[in-house]
Image (cartoon, rainbow, N blue to C red; front, side):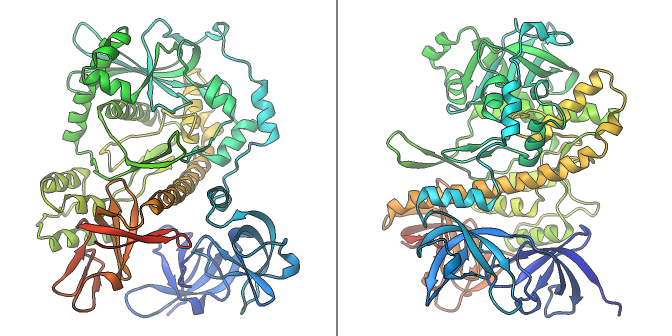
Length: 633
């Protein structure tokens, strides 16, 4: 049998083993035991050989380390018997880093530090030197700094970027050439109370036939930021803005995102508009995409729009100049929601948290509200994204799409086995799976105790959306064509497609030469930076949740099981705070066994399963593992 050689990147685990993620996307991941890593660590690029292994897993062993994935990492310093060690924050790095006292920068045990790896001995811990002390472990400021460093999120922009932005001249009426003028039309932005950058505005009216004329006007960042200039290069590297409870790491410098590009009230702003004629059935009959200029009539918040929809007379009187438009938005949104529902869009009911610090300095964690005002903007943005993507698809020009592939066969098999285990007999189609099938499953389970459980497992079954120059459609939204067009202030792909659209509209002929290869690199870079941003936001949110729940030790709450493992169950509270009930504290007569397919822990009589309601008591906080610990109440 011929040897199978694979090259890829390692994804470590705190228990010492790793998974090899092959460069060839057609290959599955390989399990590598600790004994076969041969000194390789998380993030390293390696050449490995497939081995037979034990059990159902496909295993491999490292033959050669091609390149090290890290040179610096963040962790907590500890001194022990004449030497020091740094325990990495990221649990994927199994080994502590040995630091000689002479290289410790006078760090004390319990300091959060940055360590630079200087040597990788084969049979010993990596060696390093401390380059920076961030503060004391578990202090909020030090922990946040460590997360930013761990995910390579720069707080400051490069000098050349700031200098370039400072050279930009504000948009004036003299720059209207080639732009459609919407300044006399009623337009409004609708965002959260704390929003500072406004990159989308809405206009709406009805014609004599009763069709809706919906305008989605997006900040024209490309008016300022040109391809390959200093600002564009750094925006490409950042890929996206990253949002934390008390700070933002923006993709663009503040002068751009909060001033020059922001669609602030009563100021002329350059935009790229998608104006759609939408019939009473929710279908787009006609549309125009054009460079434009608007002057926002009102800066609205989701809260105030919702109050107006609920009949708040005081606010209706205050915003009488836009009251009619808000009611039209509500009417059109209902039509669009119904149409997407008919088309099979999968609307998962997954709990999210809103985290903020109140005026007293206290951390507040609440279940995120998703009221009608939010749905209105969501539906209008989806419609504009879909319309723009379809327009560019049929032009056959280079483009960046937002794609969401079908679930893999393996995940589908597990999902349908899981449904069988719940007693839900779902007929699986031979020709494949459609989003409508998933929607039907959710609807059939809507009034059953398993609804929350099915939502969670369905989310894990589906692939993650990403950016791609190849349009394969969006499974979750049940759309053939989709892109991200509406947020160029905070997402790099939106900025790129604005450029492509404007160049095409201006008659430029060499789009393939200019963007043909670029859309591939930008798609890959943006997908990777989005993934990093999501993980960083989750880590920061989890830390804030720990700080929040640490004030409730000893108190009781109701929650649902959100995760089932062989070492216990995770329970999520109503506001999204999650904690672990260790397996040894769970009530059972015999040994609890994990059923990974059905997401259950059972001893044959007592069963703990995903989605099950439990009453818990907060037992304590394990800051080292960044985990709240619960016990059954």
